[in-house]
Image 1 (cartoon, rainbow, N blue to C red):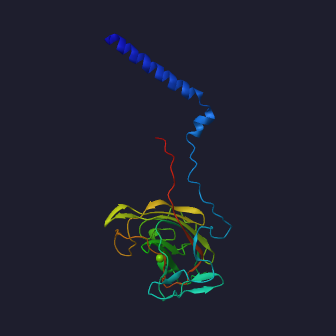
Image 2 (cartoon, rainbow, N blue to C red; image 1 turned 120 degrees about the vertical axis):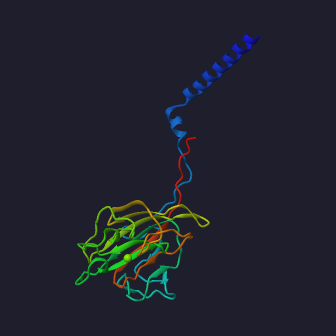
Image 3 (tube, helix red, strand yellow; image 1 turned 30 degrees about the vertical axis):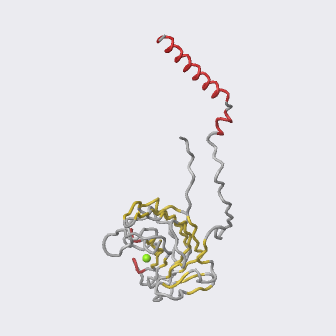
Length: 259
Ligand code: MG
């Protein structure tokens, strides 16, 4: 009786395996391939055109006015808008976007003055783009201008030297494309540092570089918990110009689940 039971069980198992195998066999390659097709969510359409912000971008400066910004000191942003260009008005202070952002893709074009007579190192037309008002991607005339490399254009100021130096001569426009993944906090605790990927004129200079903390001029950086915050542009007492500034908030990719 015992032997019968074992035999019966084994035959049952064999039958079941055979049936599974035959079912798998019945699926055509197309049907098997379809099992790893994911049809949702469908990515939203975004319209693009050369020199224009993508249709889903938040435009911070399109050449017309400074309505998306205010002064860090309070009140209206006082930088100069002329011929589609925004230029730092030295002494008026940094400007900050009215809107706060978390992780973003940011595009901005910038230009430093052609006349560099008597200017060198960090004084040669310095500005900066601060993500979340804390993490500076340096803006500086870095064309034949010796300075500490962790403070040249494309650096995360005082934290990370750019991979290469693709800047154009002063007086020419440069483009920044920045992908910023904001740091994450649980209460006061840092659970994930921020990261920056930066391209200058289409050339990679920061490749998912870990941000070490808030930008400091003196001493090492550290993190202090915060939420989403504005984009801040630096008045470093030099008439650096900007145009075509826009940001896109970054979503989360859907990964295929193979479990
Ligand atoms: Mg700066």
